Image 1 (cartoon, protein in one colour):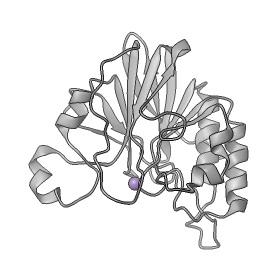
Image 2: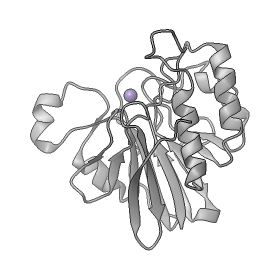
Image 3: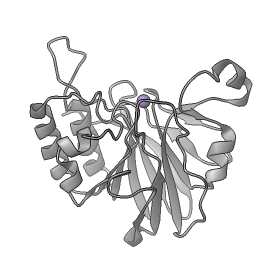
Image 4: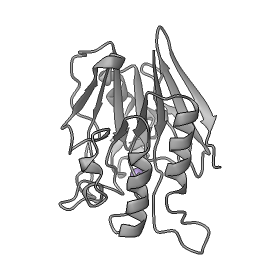
Length: 231
Ligand SMILES: [Mn+2]
């Protein structure tokens, strides 16, 4: 069995006195919770960083937290932290950490975790512009297949009204992945998405949802929301 902790939209930023911006607090809580549940792997489905200008001091703290994560961390760049030329992942030194795997840096479209019988695919944001947040479907090569995507799910009845939005995700796009689990990011609230053909979930942000999704891949797939442990 593989145990994954899925979070997104952590928005590491320069903490201020306003009480809203909270630096690395969300990341620290997510990694602590992942340790508590004995996660094999942590999935961060985009917008780990709030913006490309986060200060070096905060990034040093981010790097130290990830260095001590104690398990592999798979990161998908989102629309707030796209893979720009001098991207924030490299500025933080995360590209040099063997157990931190970043889509677009460490792998183009798929990462294999053979010991877990798992492959993970994800399409990183590379600019602030609109894009389709999925690669074309690919044949499964491992027992478990997880897809990560950062975008905006729209159910069929709302499609006409929502077509102007960016990074749209449809029922068809979710279904054609054929994945065991789709780890979605971009929404702050935790909810299932799609028509149920494939298990697709937003984890929500630690700040708003207050939880992570704990995904257990075995004979059956189980998703459980577990409260972030803040202290
Ligand atoms: Mn986003």
